[in-house]
Length: 429
Image (cartoon, rainbow, N blue to C red):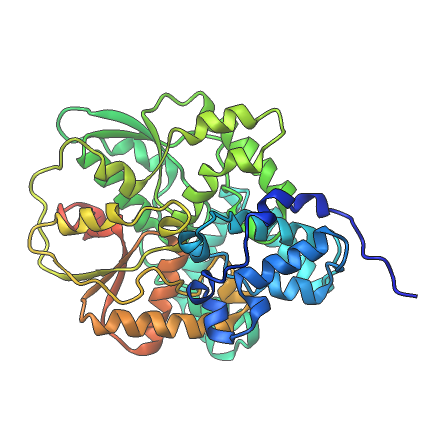
């Protein structure tokens, strides 16, 4: 006798959202996994078909279902081309939350996830300590030795680590950077979790460029990880708890906007009302969302551009998925780059195709991730650009690793770093 599929957690799969899909197939050629694998169930249309079967109780949310849901990059390229507006990102995150209520992962995997998602990411102090340890290990040569002997996932992770020689830039350091000229306003910076540890120059550059534009920058205390990585990995309740902490942290901060320099974080912060729908915090989340601006979005709307910027470089730009597809921001970063005197901007082919970073996708699906990365590096190299610019820490780390692997001399920087360099600020040094 066949076992009846479990209905535990399936209420997370919104039938109205599922039925928005008319199975037209317009999404197929935009989906990186379908293009690479040619498997219908690894396309948005195929995954929605599986979600519908689970929602109707015709299919068990088993390991096969989990495989198809987690092979998705959650890049949302399908949302950009979908004629009926299917919110695929929220659907796949809900599907993963259903998976997590049913599967039992191996002990080591559970311990690793618990360490990363529950013991590290929500705690800035612990992350800073980890950064210090990694910096010392790299400086002493221990990381290089470890990379030589490491195997499997550990080696993949070590390969992604950037040069950690930049001096730390802490939230408390922000107060030392004052607005240039007349004070134009006050912004609250979303600090993030990984970027301050691995890419301190990005944080410094962000603050210095905002100050150059005349803005006072504050970093509200009590803020934590945005919850994006938790959502992408089916840990919905943890993501909701983090969202509530961030709402409380920013609620009393006097500011003209909440500025975010990480595309993935920005997309998640703007989607807090969806994450907290039906809770007591939904109204607060709506108010908060109205104040959130991506770094490029905020600067592109500034009434005046500071004088004195100049940089003689050939530059190309890689669209982070959650900026181009999640927030629909494509023009703004390019506007800022093209406005720098003497910069020669070269558009790369398929600039908005996923680079394969996708949260921790490059760690859990390294083979596929590498295929996406090689294609991206090839497109970037063909532009002849000296500098590849992006606007998300995961993309930046992934592209830097790809450049090293390919033996290319191009530099990968965050948009804020390039603007800081153009204005002759310390972070661009």
